[in-house]
Length: 542
Image 1 (tube, rainbow, N blue to C red):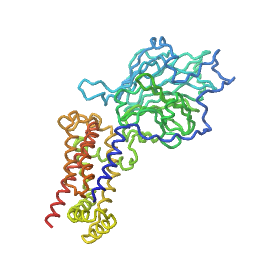
Image 2 (image 1 turned 90 degrees about the horizontal axis):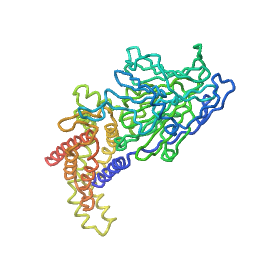
Image 3 (image 1 turned 30 degrees about the horizontal axis):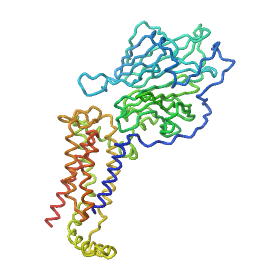
């Protein structure tokens, strides 16, 4: 393959990798069209009904959830009790003031790799009294919010352990005219799912009718999330496709989306907090992004009509767990354009890890397997480069002889290629075919939660983090330099200088990339050098 072809491909890879390095936000997904569902009502407001069994003297204000932090009195929260729910997978803290989630610690995931690191808390709210899983109920067209109510629990204890059959936390608070609002948290054993069910009962214990519920998720971006090379923010699945607010939409404080909704919530690189819709159609509200000082406050709200319950998934973005929900929740994993290739590669990675119990070794095995799969194509490419190297001296003479006659030079070069049966483009196709697989694996290693805090060998204790001593990126750069020196040149001095700069550019880009990704690139380079060396020896012997 000609040097200019290699240069073009290398530059393309550099541009794509560099773009993600410099601009971590992924491309926007178009906003779905606003449609009116036959079962949906407007999120902005609701009409009152004279037949409402729960009628207050003054209607409660339908506050925009983005301003809830300023309208909610701090005194209410000071009176609440903190109830602790222990599951095999998490520890949840629920405040009886507002019936909101104060903390949600994942027992299988820590904040960092230090020995004394605390469990990761998915609830991050900075300087706000608006916490996740606050909500409201619709009764005959009027909304009643729970975040301004002080709930009580029939149980005296402050701790609940999720049993094998599941457990329920029942909160209740006075509504009006003798009615009571009940908010149930149903905890499912060995699952990151929580079901929130609302009820209203009168003084005699008779249940009233609820026409719909709203539930909100509030989040403040943590410092480490701002440094990640993937999208962090509101995400949903609406009208059969993935949805996230565009940059323009993020500048406004509130949006309304009406239509078939599967889920809506907040996503980060490795975790998602999603509100799941129990029926095919619902009205959803995404409040966009609020910029406050040095934090990025995100509030996502979901409204579901004709129901009294919503489920919430609060946990890791593991493909098997997300697929089990049956709502395309697995699409929240950002595999990019080549997701159809990336997913089976991740499954292979899990398969190898079951036997070697080390994701670093699993990456090496997967890299070798991919190299073997493309061996015939790579072999053809290297043989083509070997033939090109043989005719380089004659090409140099032609360029010197016809340097002032480009047309004659091109004709003589084509005659030379035909005489020696060399196709300067024969090495292109094998490389082009491998590009989708490369980018798929690159993206898979970038977002695979299994690599988070997964150790390899020696100083590399987290394959999802950069090499702390930059050893692997520097070795990777050296292998790229060696590979460039082994590649035949065209005699073009400008191209030669640019090719020598490529290892330097890639090395700087990879300094802050996850060490698992650098390991893949390094092993791939070493295997390519070995294969290219064998081809060169065979060519020299013949």
